[in-house]
Image (cartoon, rainbow, N blue to C red; front, side, top):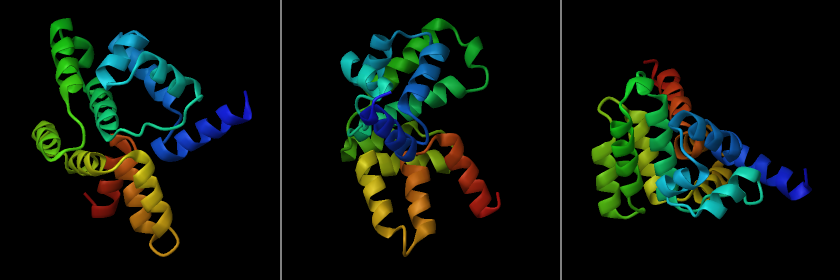
Length: 175
């Protein structure tokens, strides 16, 4: 593995909780999509998805892509996902694909899609609608020394997986 790929995978693990190739491969398997199909759902070009998976590129700079990635991961992780009819899965993927960039209307559309009772997901949607993963990590790095708990909140809710955010919320609030 080249030094650049190793560095990029390490950055992905820091920014997104794990290398993007691992996250994308789980989605490909669970959703039964090709790389081109997953790229279409996320709003990436197939070459960009391939470069992110292989570690040739490190970051996803579009917050809408990160939001769609989180939404696709949530769909794939739903209890009973395997029992959903193919048409329902396709319709849900189409709705995810249609989510827009980080604009006020896009934020409203995202907020409307946030499941009831999921404050962690709502926080993730909010952070991802206003800043890219790199911007969130940059903000966390700036405050990490003086305010490490706040930096962790930015990282967990801004760039982490939904399950990690929900676990953090439960630990923090004692829920």
